[in-house]
Amino acid sequence: MSLHQPQHGDPIVAIATAPGKGGVGVVRFSFPSSSSFQAFCAAFCGKLPKPRMATLLTLRDVDQHAIDEGIALLFNAPASFTGEHVLEFQGHGGQAVLQGVVAHALAVARQLNIPLRHAMAGEFTQRAFLNDKLDLAQAEAVADLIDAGSMATAKAAAASLSGVFSRQVNELADRIVHLRLLLEATLDFPEEEIEFLEKADAKGQLAGILNAHGQLLNAAQEGVKFRDGLQIVLVGEPNVGKSSLLNALAGEEIAIVSAIAGTTRDRIKQELNIRGIPLVLVDTAGLRETVDEVERIGIERTRKSVQEADLLLILKDATQGPHDALHQHLELPVHLPTLTVLNKVDLLPEAPQLLQDVLPVSAKNGQGLEQLKDAILAKVGIAHTPDHGFMARQRHVDALLVCGQHLVAAHEFAQQDDRILDLFAEELRLAHDALGEITGRMLPDDLLGLIFSRFCIGK
Image (cartoon, rainbow, N blue to C red):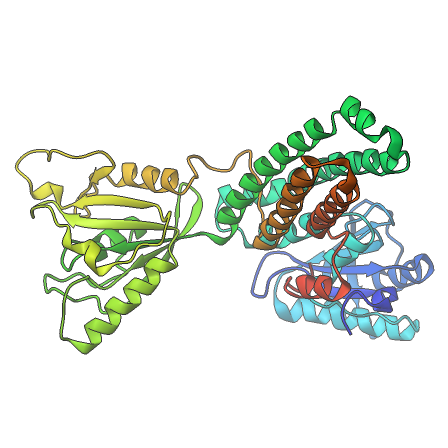
């Protein structure tokens, strides 16, 4: 049975802190029923805590042996995270202690004939969604905030959790609804529809909607980059210093560096942050003609990595003459951003004469690495950290793309004669429905269950 089914009438409990040792551990409860909640809290805590006030207490088992000492925090519905009655016990960290607290809670509930059970993954956040405390985009941001690997990505996730993304989606949806109402009212009075629509500037409203949609789509696509990271692929001929550059950007020895050509036989992936943006840097086999079967397989995998890249770093040796042979080994995807990097400039007697968009670096002494980092972000369309952006997921972008297709179709119908205004209105309805998928208003229950099942237990 998926989480969205009527079993949400059950009270739930879960350890809300990550496994392992820690100074503080949290056990969280959520109860739909006020009467069972108060009875449970009084029995579990030994007394009924005052709402929204920290209450120091010692949990004791049936033999009055101490289980743990900590504080209880009680939040009555609807002023809680889930929108239900919530109790949090904050005690000492450590799995044995926390599991003992949960076992004690289940035993107390059985004595009171209360059907308390272990929460499923993401069930606390799903209840918040179902009780209108969060929309789906905000709920997903809870998981993104937990998973954030840098302060920049944490800020973007926090912005989504606070509703920055959702407000923009809802504002766009409201504009579409306003235009839909105008069109549908016009369809009821066909003899006046043209004059009525011209006075209301229906085409102008649609143009504004299309513009707002384009801005939101661009922001969401950038938000996906913050969440999923970007794949940056290093390519070049053997011995130009790809592995050395990977190690320099990563700040540690990830790849084997050798003067022997063809040392790197397979792809090496390394996750790192540049200016707070998550990246996956891929070091590939050097591109050249070879009869070595293992090296040939590595080169084929290099070509595959290029097809999957968000940015291609073409690395060249500054001590060698210009090389154009590299491109004969590659079939670059259309519109794939590329950046040419000239390595080993520390070996030159004087600064090289460079062309535009060619960056001089030395993987050995770090020269030019900071400029390279800035250039990488600029090339992929992220020129700054997301202090004013938000986190997004690919499903959000997909929904916005569908919305855009229907808005374009609506625009095409709007340019034609008045006999297809009903199709104009229908395309607006479909665009509005696509936006509803982002906030969860139009998603089927089975997909909602799948989304929340990927959350951690206790959240």
